[in-house]
Structure formats: C-alpha cells, structure tokens
Length: 69
Image (cartoon, rainbow, N blue to C red; front, top):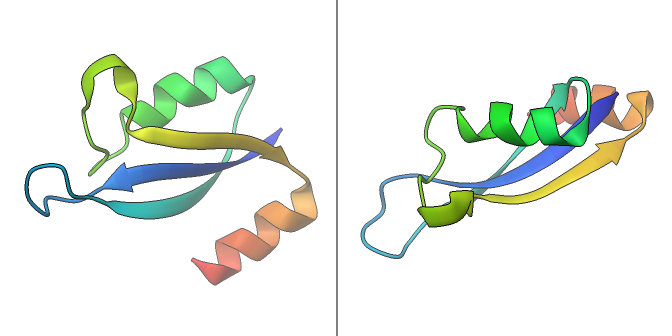
C-alpha cells in the first residue's frame, strides 16, 4: 500500500512550521503513522500532532510523487 503523508517540519521558532509532503510505502495506516512520527525534522508536538494527513494513494500517484520530490 502507498501513502501520501503531510507533516509539519522545521525549526522556525515557537509555533511556526513548514508543511512537507512525503510519499511512502508500508503496511496499514496506523503503522505508517508511527513510522512517520519518527522521520527526521517532524515537529514533536503533544499527542503527535506533527502529522497533518496520511492518505492512501495509488501506485501511479506514488511514483509521480517520488519524481516530484
């Protein structure tokens, strides 16, 4: 299964962040949530709110996303 993950990243000061999109391949959505929270530069907010969106996508969208990144 392929996923599009939108996360808040960066050290831009208190309360400020930058959204970043990553494309990943993995098992289920819950395991991807835990994996994405351990990515470098992800904001470590309370209750793991640094991950904004995890969306299942097709293989074609995944490949397009990899080339865009």
